[in-house]
Length: 189
Image 1: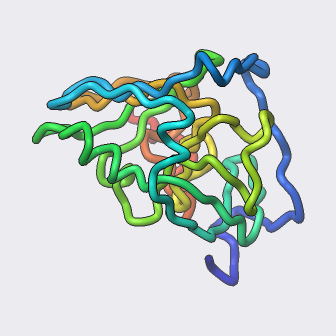
Image 2: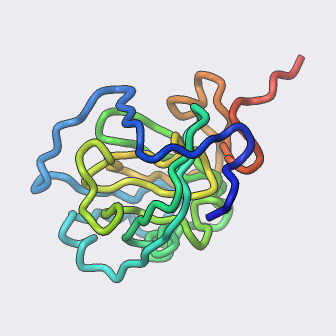
């Protein structure tokens, strides 16, 4: 957490909830998280599997590209690095492509995906995620803008080549580091 927000941001007291593709219906008994792509072992986790794993808590500010940040949010769950290790992600992987239940997608550089505070969140501020906050699971990478923190995650695909996600197709930055003000792709002529 920082005392000052990143460039172009201002702190607000509560989240503004976005559902760009609508609110998916979740049947938790049917939901799974798949880990696929350039891995030694493709994995499938149920919600119960994830709840049984050792978890960590990360306290961080949360930043949206729409110029607002929420200070000191507490996220709890599994380090993304653990999923990487369990799947045996292969050498040469450069990207994690994330697919959500509503069809939303985003792509994250592998080094950001496995950073120390990057987690698959199941809880926010000590409570199970609400459907609006991404229940059953969402990605949290504190130094990246919120569009990289995909809600309602159903699959993580590890890749060696870049592919645009939903917002990246519309010109948003390939990484989206809030502290570097990486909002949009550079236009090259």
